[in-house]
Amino acid sequence: MTIKLYTLCGANSKQTFSPHAWKSVLALHHKGLEFEEMPVPFTAIPNIENGVSKTVPVIKDGSRVVADSFLIASYLEETYPDRPSLFGGPGGEAAARFVESWTNVTLHGALRSIILGNVHDCLAPEDQAYFRQSRETRMGKTLEEVAATREQDIKSFSSHLAPLRLMLKSQPFIGGNTPLFGDHIVFGALQWARIVSTVRLFEDNDPVEAWFERGLDLYGGAGRSVPAAA
Amino acid sequence: MTIKLYTLCGANSKQTFSPHAWKSVLALHHKGLEFEEMPVPFTAIPNIENGVSKTVPVIKDGSRVVADSFLIASYLEETYPDRPSLFGGPGGEAAARFVESWTNVTLHGALRSIILGNVHDCLAPEDQAYFRQSRETRMGKTLEEVAATREQDIKSFSSHLAPLRLMLKSQPFIGGNTPLFGDHIVFGALQWARIVSTVRLFEDNDPVEAWFERGLDLYGGAGRSVPAAA
Image 1 (tube, each protein chain N blue to C red):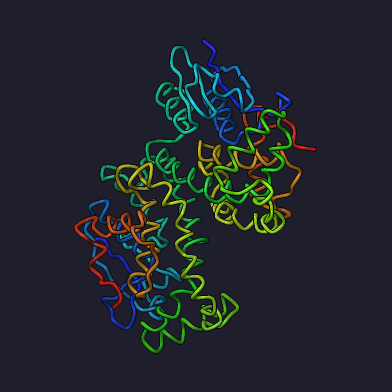
Image 2: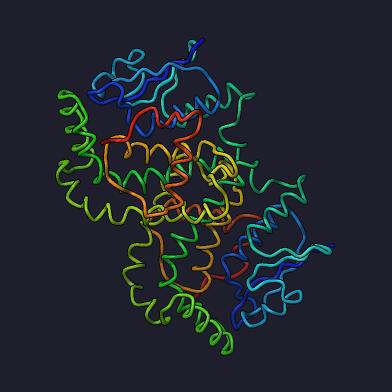
């Protein structure tokens, strides 16, 4: 039976931008599993599978419902062990938790001031109201206050990619010679920015940009199915 | 045959402080292999095994000589597959390269201004001269210029540990429920600081400090065999 994957969209239902949902899109492709993507706007998340989760992604696989991008990846790895591995063993699964934490703290942290305004602008009016209220409560600042450091955060963003840039001297993917879920995690952050914003985040001739382009090419160019913001 | 491990020491041959050598100390203990540690000062590195490497650690295992902490870990994993794994599979080995890059860029980068002066001070005179010249050439700054940002780098150091702090909410080690080489990599950086400097790097009640203490306890308290700077 085809797996259902709930993702997040803007006013345009084809503009699916959630970094966390993108991890699950790539994970499902990586496993070679058929799935149907069901994009929902922020205010429709409570309607997904009887309100199972406050966030996307959520998958429904037969009777099993799983929320959270990491738990989904672990579920797929356990349930479909004969498909290509997402982790390359238990050590890879554990280390992917470090990659996730680094991505959330460093990349999402830096992207917040840079693209939250763009995210807001791509939403339908009722989702804009929800987004503003929930984010401003969480951050203790207005969206405009968060964006106050935008220009300097754009300038310094590339420095946050330095660990990845150094690693790429040893190997082409976080997974080694081929991508694993750790690559999908970092990809999700940069794909989020690509889809909602025209901001340039890479240095010229940046090996990290070359890695991101390789990520966009994976699984028949799945990442390019949603165009970059224009 | 007992493996020889060449590490780095100050004027006191028992003060073995190299972050990279500590990774190999823990890796050998992790594998349960007998080894003899041979601490050498900076200026004696060219004498190790006919000048095989410009840096330590170096191991000699029978007729095999291997330099570089990561290559040593990979060598041990491949040569002693029946011993406890250092990587937990190929995905863990690849991801450890990301942990290594993050540690080198972020932690070693931040520790440079904080502890290079302490490293210098613990060396014998001829090693101090070598250390000053080689580091000043590499960094394009005098040791004193590098230390100019010391106070602010001490204050901000804890923020660099945020990804690890967040990960520790999911699991007690980078390796998951038990430590792997990724833990040894980060441990090496903090052990380096512990041995040469009295600087306090952690927040109060920092989960990262609790993780570091667990690291000091591993393998019969191997990390505590060299005392903290006093």
